[in-house]
Amino acid sequence: MYYAITHLTIYKYSDPINDSVMELRMQPRSDETQRCPRFDLHISPSTKVFNHRDYLGNSIHTFDIPAPHTKLAIKAEAVVEVKDKLNLPNALPMSSWDTIDTEAKHHNMYDMLLPGKFAHPTDLLQDFADEINWKRRTDPLNLLRELNSTIYQKFDYVQNVTRVDSPIDDALSARRGVCQDFSHIMLALVRQVGIPARYVSGYLYHQRDHDRSDVDASHAWVEAWLPDLGWIGFDPTNDLIVSDRHIRVSIANDFAAASPSRGVFKGAAETELDVRVKVEKLDELPFEEEELAPEIVLPHYQYYQDQQAQQQ
Image 1 (cartoon, rainbow, N blue to C red):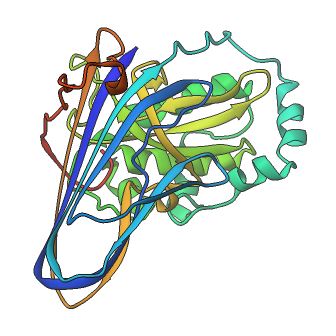
Image 2: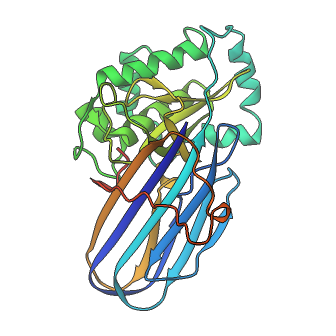
Image 3: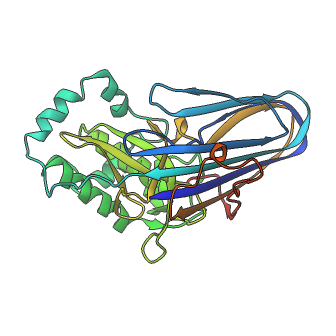
C-alpha cells in the first residue's frame, strides 16, 4: 500500500517569544515493514534543521529559532510504502512463555518491560486486571488478542475526556478516552505479564465503517514481542491486529518519548496549538522529483483537518 501524508502543526503565541528549540518525530520509519522514499519538512520562520536517529531507529529532527516570533508553523509531507503484514497462527505453544522469559533478560528487550511516564502500574490498573482475570492463562498470542478486544469493548472512544498529559487513571475511572489512553493501559498490562511491549506513534488510513478513532488525527497503538513472530502490532482503539493501513512513525516506551513535536522557548506567552493531518491512499508510488523534467513539479498533498495535539 502507498500513502501520502501531510502533518501540519502551528504554534501561536500571545506575545513574542525567542530562543525556541524544537524536537520533531514526524518522519515515518523505514524498516522491514515499510519504507519512506520521500519526506519533506517545511518550517516557518525559516531555520536550519538537523537530523539524527536514536537507538530505536527513530528519525529525529531538531532546530532552533533565536529571533523573536509569534507563530511557528511545521509542515511534514511524506510518501510511504507499507508492506503486507505477517499472517499470524491461531495460537502459539504454551512453551512460548519460557522463551519470552529468556529473551526478556536481553538489554534490547528490557527497556520495553520498564514502566513509563504514562504506562505504569496503578491501583486502578490492578483493579481492572483483576476484573478481566489478567494473567498467564493461555498462550501469549491469544492472551494479547483477548486484551486487545477487551479494551475495545470496555472503553468508549470519547475525545476531550483526557488530555495529552493525562495519567491512565483518568481513562480507567471514566472508562472513556482516546488511542493514547488505551495504548498506555494495554502497555502497562502486557508488561505486567512479562511480555516486552512498546508504544507506536503513527497514522491510520481509516475505513469509516469500522474505525472509531479520529480520521483526521495521528494514531497510536502497541507492539508486543512474541517468539517466532517478532514485534506484532495491536490496536485496542479499533480492535485490530495492525495491518497495512497502519503507518509507523516512532516507537518508544510510551508517549513521553514519542511525541511528534516538543520544545521549549524563552518568554512569557500563552500558546495556542493547531494540528492538522491527512492520510491519503495512492494507487502507486509517485515518481521522485529528480526523475522528472525540471519544469515538472510534483503536487503537494495539502489536505488539512483540525485535530487535538493528543493522539486520537
